[in-house]
Amino acid sequence: MNTDKTIISVAVSLVILGSIFFVIERIIGRGRNRAQPIIRRGWLTDVIYWFITILLTKPFVRLMMILPLSVLILAKVTSLEILKMGSYSGFGPLSRQPLWLQAVQIYLIVDFCGYWNHRMFHNGRWWPFHAVHHSSEDLDWLGSLRVHPVNDLVNKMVQVTPVLLMGYNPKVTLSTAPILTFYAIFIHANINWDFGPLRSVIATPVFHRWHHSRETEALDKNFAGLLPIWDILFGTYYMPRDRWPENFGIHEPMPGGFLAQIWEPFARLMRRKKKENPST
Image (cartoon, rainbow, N blue to C red; front, side, top):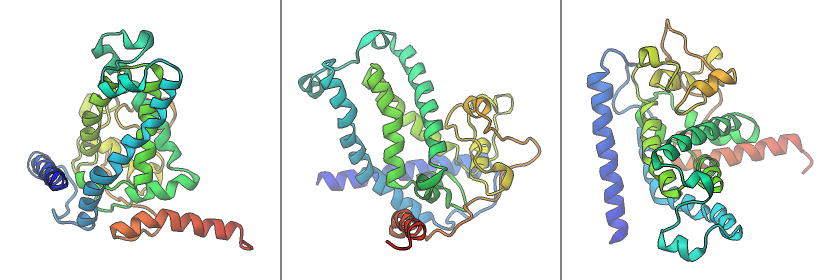
């Protein structure tokens, strides 16, 4: 019965998000978006990702949080009993700051770590897992849900582990997750909004949709999820004022179905290994 309720809850949340972004993309943003049908290529695959991510990947991510929490227990800054009671509030001087100040710092740290983690996934053996996310050719809010479980797991671990080990209040850390998740969905939306004077201050749909563009000058640009300052500082910022991103997807083949996409990164790595070591 609990499983049924969870599935219904996940379905309802998807409908709510769909309603919100229908208004954003089709009504408010009408005339400033890329023409594509509501039921576009790959929409069912992305819906499946939504259910799998929440029902399977998210619980596994929570399980993996045992690793940084174990470090805190071994360092004797907390105990298993305190964690079970939910009364752990961090340690050291950072945890004694006002909660609002901790939240600001956590956003900065998470976004900075996310920037470098994102860059990592655009290289070498990490790319096949991230290529799944970039494979959407009709990019909209729903396309943001297409994330390989390996990609999702590493993202969460890289972003959460540092703030936990630095001593921040874990409740404040967890409270940022829904906001960052919604914003990550928003910047994929099919709308050409760049927030005018704030275009270089906060990530916008135009900023991130250039990241998904197949155009040569946009490749490996705009990695930040919230603050473009990281791209500006490290030379990966791209935001032309005279045109909008249009051509999305990747330059290599990617199967269309969910299960095939889950397997494809592993298959690609095995093909690469076989090519590098033909005698094995």
